[in-house]
Image (cartoon, rainbow over all chains, first blue to last red; front, top):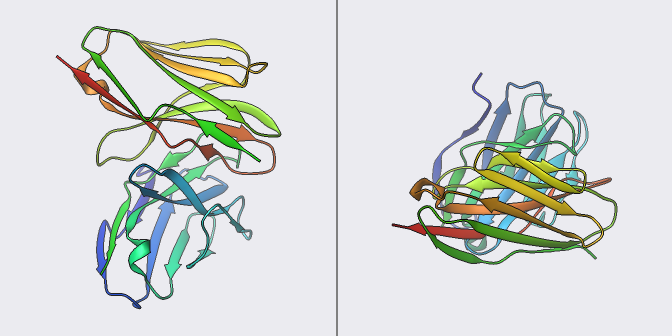
Length: 112
Length: 109
């Protein structure tokens, strides 16, 4: 079992460019999450999907969109990247919304 | 509203015991989790308290007092490899986990 995988591991964008961060899990979990982590700010929830076919906003959703492609995959899209979106992005999954979360290795994104 | 408070930094020496506190204010609370994150790594689950009292897992223990809206993570026989960030996270009805801002633990020899 690979657990939670994320691609890419590193990315550099110019302001205004778009990109999609991919996340997949092989644990048959129902719920999936996207977080961003900035120094001193902890883990801030961007969006989550409690189950296939549903998505909900978290604490910091502005500038992002998500797609729950199927039970395994949950993608995060930046339509027009801004320097304020420079961060480490983590995907996580859990059996149910209220259960222990398992995290992917993260994507380190820099927007110039 | 909802809030979680934990110290930003804690320092200790090898072999010592350290306690990281977490106080919370939230509605629909039903449990508290702790996660560990090493520098450059991903957060990993350490423990969960759904009921009042102490949960022990090896050198680590976690405590919850619902009446005080308070919990702590206790790390015993500290080792250098315990240097990491530790996050408390609140489980509450109707939404995803809410994480604290984390406590950076530095263990020195």
